[in-house]
Length: 420
Image (cartoon, rainbow, N blue to C red; front, top):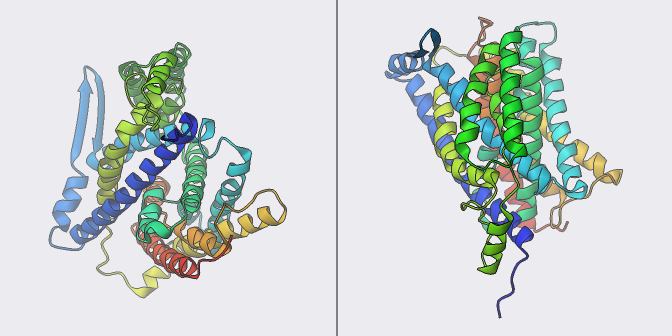
């Protein structure tokens, strides 16, 4: 007789396992895309690489025109799809997943807060007094979950599932923090007319959600003009993806779910026709984002010309602040605030996870890459600063040493088979 796993538990476990496998593989593809970008930017292909990124791309509809270089279409357009997926993951985790319980959410919340505050403090300490450099204070606060899980996957099945879930939860809180930082600190002059149009689209999305409309086309028809309105408003366009995600229904068709139960379909695969739209869209978008959107973004943003750079350039406060923020700040913040929360009995360590493993994850949180590159583009793209480009080198260096350090510490801790 086969023991059936309760449907809600089975759904959460299956979704988490699928997510971790996909993100880990996506992290390896990201590494390859970043490597190709570095080769292109530091080889005879450099002029063609630069020409590709500056290629003008224009969309025109009557008198309405959107004209941007290819790089900005990637950073403003494709990344909106990434933020849409992040928003759906955040909504699902808060309502049904690991963040729906205060008991499981407390420790990653404290870790994420420390993991943003300490790196920012390290960067500010090194760059105080330079108004242009201070724009980049949020660059080392980010965590790249795909890269981090990619490194974690290299350690094989010995890694406890609870540790993977903790890293995933920290990264989700970190993404939420990054969204808030972008909304409040990297917003240019606002257009009230565009914001008003965006508000009208949001009202329409709320109506669709209220009616539990489960046809993706209905949300696309409002989501695209919402993106354009946010783009024109002065608020960064990618935030339109997060807003859209908040209105995608997570309520399913009760009759369809009952039929699935009757046929023994308790594998948590809710992406079929009768399942909640949010789960279906999340399932469909994951491979496109992991193996398409993020590698394209990495290829477009990770190409840093290193010819002519010296050790003195790397010791500039901006790249140095980013490297130390990612490597030291993340360790201090994630591990320090986690320890404080446990000592004050505000949170508890995950089952089977000791401080050595948590230290390794704290190091992996210093892999900023995707979100760090994105925030850096917002912070410095229009400043004309003399150090432009060095901040990307700081991100790559900080992420590299954090990834190597995290792998080494986790390998050591797993070898000791430490108790929780």
